[in-house]
Amino acid sequence: MPQAVKGITQVFGLDTINALQTILARSEQVTIPDLETSCSRFPNTDQSVTHNDQSIHAIISERQQQLDAVLHEISGLQSVMDGIKNIHRQLLKKKDRIRHSMILHKGLTSRLWRLPTEVLSQIFHHCLPDHCFPESNRPSALEAPVLLTGVCRRWREVAVNTSSLWCNVSVGFDNLRYYYLEELQASRYDVWLKRSRGHPLSLSLVCEADDAARLQSLLQPYINQISSLSIIFHEDVVEPELLLDDLPVLQELTIRTLKENRSRHSPSIGKSLSRLPATLRSLKVVEWYFNTTQTSFGPAGSHLTNLDVATLLHQSTVIHLLQLCPNLSSFKFCGQFDTNETLDSFTHTKIQTFRVLARCDASSYLSGLFNALSLPNLRVLENYCSGSVRYPDEELKAFLARSKCPLERLIFSSRGKPTMTDEVRAKYIDIFPSVEISLVEDLFAFLYL
Image (cartoon, rainbow, N blue to C red; front, side):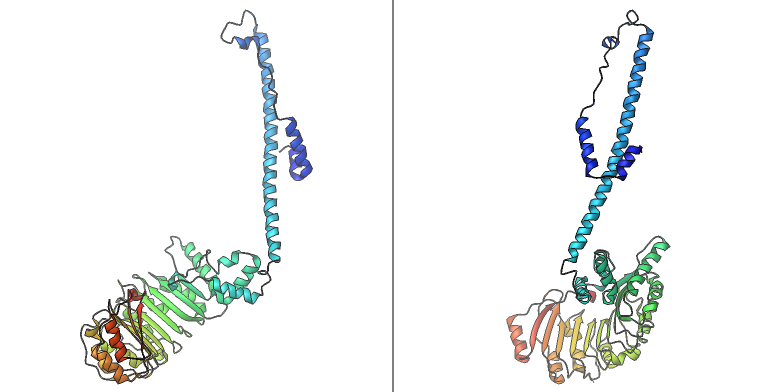
């Protein structure tokens, strides 16, 4: 770059701009010389009679000098233009910095900037995404809390130091081609979990292939924080029980497997259930065929207050589960009972909510269970039905009469909102005059049925 242009780049201001504008105004047009000669007027005729070679060579030499001069001018002008473009880029950068500084200082006058850290933290909690399924809560730069860390320095400090923002996350390994990408993904999860700083964790795991061992390794430093755990096992997962052992403070556990493979993992999962800690209060297991006749819940059984299981094949399994969990207050199950069974009478004194989902006709599978069961503390009874609600079964009426329970609500649910004729509703009101009758659409029934 010529020295003059370099000087312009180093020291640039309004005076320089005015000087350049003055120069450009005086040089708006380039003078084109008259290049016509007698030879050029008749280029295709014999010029040897009127001109000798020496005069023609003189013209060529003059034109070469003129060409060299204009090429030099073009080169100089190009250098000036490059310098001006460089100055223009610097001015744009200067403009952006000034605007950024203005925005920053305008923010200092905003009441939002003056909010106490505690208030800002509460606002951040309301920014967290609300996903229908826990496994959808994967870390994303487009959602809080990660999104909040990129707004400004103070918001980043508040977000990173608000541990409760980092206590809920879905963890799963994508099928990445290169090992270093898997390590990078694991390290990002680790950074997220470290920001929880010892607070209780609510995790959702998506486990396939050999993910169980990698997930166990990732979560090992945080096992004393995991209070809520939801796991989805895919069809090709190996050693799923690795994720169910050594969870000393676990309070809520949800296990779901795909329909294609639910029977495959039942034995290993069943063994792990018998080793669950006494801290567990809520257990949900959605298996294709969940068989607990040979399984116990170990120390957790006597402390469980909420149990949700599917799919049960025998009515006797319902009684068995109730016997394992004497302190249950809520019990939900999906049953596929082909035949009725003769069951011994059983009374559970703590159940307040009893929810039943059916994979067969209600009258064919509940009679044996209702004939044996008594729930004297029952408040809410939910029965899954397909389509319209029928007249109350004799077994249902006998069950409620025998239980002498303070029933408050009777719920009929289905994938689509069920219907009830006025005649059927009147019959239920006649039998249960003080009971609220509700028709509910169960949007998540497909997880069971």
